[in-house]
Image (tube, rainbow, N blue to C red):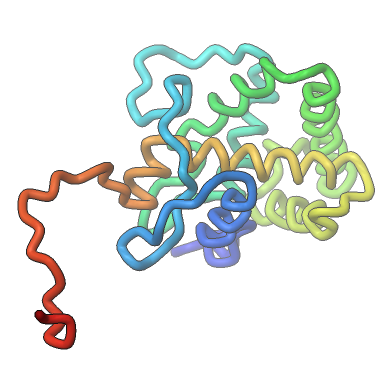
Length: 200
């Protein structure tokens, strides 16, 4: 049975694409269904074939797991494609933050700590130990002022949501499974326009 959170996702795929399209050039509509961000798969972007256990460059193991949980709540697995965890979005985020300025790094480290503290305050346990419904309700609460955050948890949510979207749609899963992008195709024959009214 699909959980309430799966039906009421933090972020729909379409909303994610609209968010990402605000910062990059957009592809034409693919398969007449959705708009894809014009992003190529970065050499360090997550792929589906991990060869070695992941060792974070910036996050601690506990912080990395929090990023995994939160990003997967933002873009969970659905009937069409796997979610952020399977797309290894955490690896993309870790790389980006490891190469960021100190102020950006502080928002992530302090933000993850703030989410844990808020979870302990509300539920008596850290975010990773909370139930999925509790995790979802906390994220919904700190996303209420998205775009004009008023405190650290809300500012942090803005950051992790954007990075999650960027990581997901530069991953093999995001591009090829969710968007079903096939790459440039060879056109063996061009038949021209077939509309009668456009005939010579």
